[in-house]
Amino acid sequence: MTKKVNIPTVAGADVESVNEAVSARIKLYRKLKKISLDELSRRAGISKGMLVDIEGCRANPSIALLCRLAAAMGVSVADFVNVASTPPVHLINAEEMPELWQGERGGCARLLAGSSGPDMLELWQWTLMPGERYTSPGHPEGTTELLYVLSGELTLTVNDDAWAVVAGSSAVAKTDAPHAYINDGQDELVFVMTVSERAQ
Image (cartoon, rainbow, N blue to C red; front, side, top):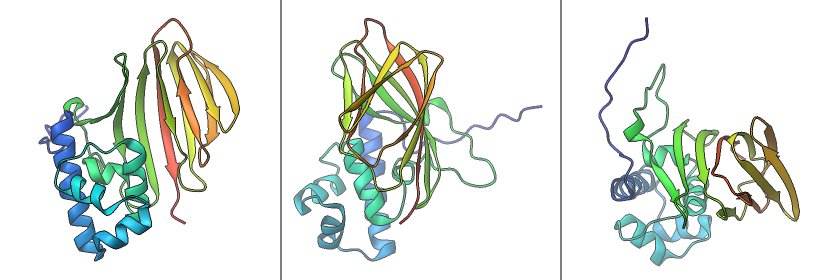
């Protein structure tokens, strides 16, 4: 018999709650790891002013920016938004799964679950409406993504190469280079993705 557990919501799924969680956790991890704003700015390659705005909950950091900050601090994006696993089992309610990207036409990306620490493993669900795309500058060296298309057709680009991944098909991609997810079709695109990133 499956045991159902009600887990208190901390991060929540709305942008304001996610930003508050990210702000608090970045400050916490900086304190625990004894990293100054100047040092984190240098490691992550972002301005000190942007860090101040994020920690002050005055900025809405992108997925790419959260990835850079997490890598610079030796943690995962899931640690920032409170969907990291806690042994032996951590159940995550739907309302606790944060939406970390919104497309101009109604698409979205939700972080469904993730592991803690520098050896990161994350599970995502993406929805892209016709004409939408998400572009990433690339993750740390050695990052691998596994993608499975539930509906529609995904155009996946890595560097200057493109692949079509149709519904019911999968792809394995090295994403430590610039890459993008694109919906060039006429139908809604939905795919799930895992991201594996090993600490260097």
